Image (cartoon, rainbow over all chains, first blue to last red; front, side):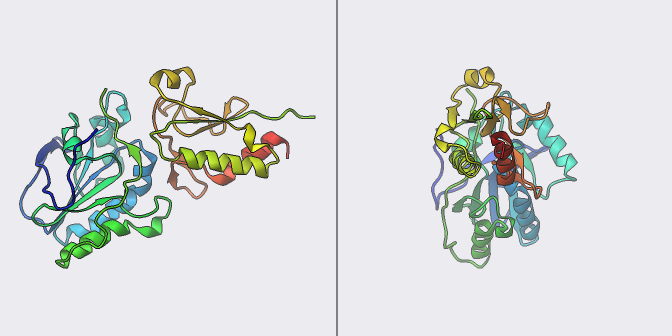
Length: 178
Length: 110
């Protein structure tokens, strides 16, 4: 089980490898808001929401929002979620607008309390958690366009609190090491 | 007279689509003139279960022992959530309802 953070609490620090081998860390400079979300290669829910999450990243990066995607699945049991497969996927998709980090020890997932893929955490400029949950209300409906994530970011960029602070993450469970 | 096909859904609790999968198959069994009460729902709980049943992920629908949409050779086996493609090309944790309907109607001889 995960410990995790609650709304209003600070983002646990981390440094993890990106698919190009470089290390990415949090905190790292100033951002108007930061989105940390768990995803992976093999889960149909993560795949169904994938384009919407990348689209949101492209729309908000220019507004000072930092996005970091993390895969914490056990790559021994799920080799399609290993670092080689992560790199191949990003290459095959022509690059992502944000890092795709591998949390091999799963310590970051446990520190955040991430449970599923996807599982979205949105932090304000002081890295306090302001939204946690699903990207939107229906993985089947592309028109929802990560609306819950976007609403949270719009609120933070306007200097207000997101109206919806928590929703239930929907997706595959993170595959913990045995 | 044709024999009643055996319909089985193999499912893993950690994939949240399992309840909808069972509901979907029962609905389409009824629509195909089959008894939804005859659906065999098999929970896969361990890696051993997955190996023993050659489980390609949850949910898996078998008709007379054959996968309704046989997995490709590169698709993993084991405790995982299965990736389906709907008829409009979307990725989904569930098979397209029309594919289920078609398979069940074919199996029922309707």
